[in-house]
Image 1 (cartoon, helix red, strand yellow):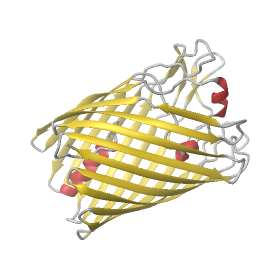
Image 2: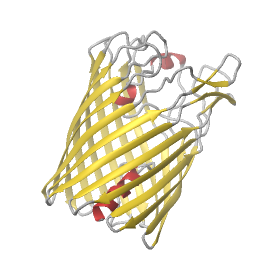
Image 3: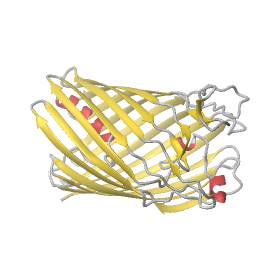
Image 4: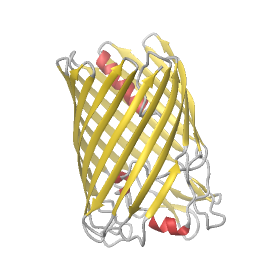
Length: 386
């Protein structure tokens, strides 16, 4: 049952903003996290290449029943997209996240809720020249850690409920993001943009079959409201449904493995017609995806933990015909990662990892030929509790 609870808690924490670099529970109330990621990529076509470096800093205060954190990110990127007339360069802070929570236990039921803020400290407005050089192909989401660097003031209430029984844990989580508006283009007037509010709902269950075996299933739903330009509806993104299944195996005291499969399906968008009202697309311009991965951990010693990860992801073609300008042929992705965690004391540890990714982006309206991207990512992080 402890294994099931741990898995379920991890799923919910990862669904909350700012939780990516936080530990589930700390002996000390203060937690400082400093991390960095550097990625670089090349392609075999169009001389497309680039790099991105991201630094992350978070200070969290956690009393177990209540807490708060402040997170900031700095990014530096330089790349040339296929078909662009020059390089896109940026050096900027991203928006700042302020997270809060309060937690209560009622017997076997755990409740957690809070309100987060995303404060617009990043870059959200670009010149026309910069906009013409931004990578708009969806492959950018697989290549770069960050694709947007700023927006408006967002307010995000969230709630989690977890109920534990003998050998089984089930729960539900929800968050609603009230999105603020911002100016996306410095050289255009009357273009204030307000992305649609975001509703995320998640249900999950973890079952500890034996002391060493567990399974976990998660289903999530994402719905976005209407995007507005200068106060008028201009677009609505289709709802997204996803499902994730994992099998966790503990091989003695030193080795753990996780085998997982994730499927995502996105519905039809609504776009602005010539008569200035939203109408569903003729076909679905969004892609569905299927991903499978295996993750292994080996506790080499009390102070050293080794990790390996390998996986494959297939993003299928969207619903448009090949000759249509909205056609997206999808891509195939393979990746492998190795990493380690060093525990210096009970209150301080460091992580390092290296990942190689190979992406075959298929020929479509935004790519004149099949293009292979090779991506290298390196991560370093230091976590200190006090």
